[in-house]
Image (tube, rainbow, N blue to C red; front, side):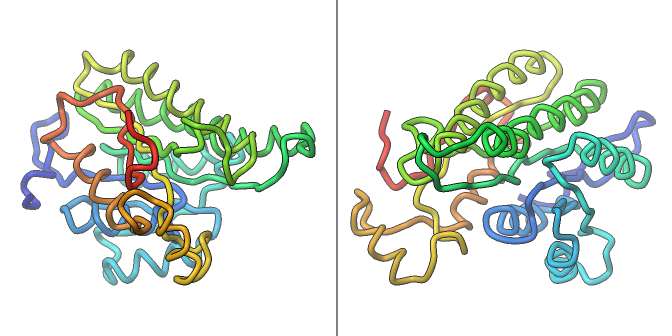
Length: 258
């Protein structure tokens, strides 16, 4: 894909480079997705609670700051999301692409989850998706083009085998929310899809020895990479994916087949 493929038009018909907002982009999957979309020709905005590492990633992508920048956003706070989004719109306009990636993982028995922790995980992992889909989706609907990708998980399909029940419930909710927004926006040139990874090598998994042990238990015999997830997201936000909406793309090495 060339840069020209990621150019849209504003309301005056002037060509402009399309932009992508990625949450939780300071490391792991979010960092890989931001890098891949930047390579595809998007202007990327890396949103994260930890601004400094997100800014370091953005600077590696583009030291000039013209096509990659970081913004501070606490997705556990609806007010923080709305404030950061409003500032982004004022500076750069509403994003053409939204990737809801930021999340919180807590490993705990369902018998030990208290209601405050339950609420905190759902606020971060699911409520943030709702708020950002509302904000970005409304602008995309008005523009007549847009792409939203919500990061779900194998846990949202099969339950929390490793992570807690609150994490699994939030990721199941992300899949349902994806379908609802897909239906609302389909007639307006906006697609909404989910990606459900499993056994992807990220800092949360540990070292390569642990990853190799996990990989031996998968049908493909290895764990996946953040770059493989990013490739899937890059397709779903491209101009080529306009007939794909309301779906959940599994990236799990065959551990969950359907």
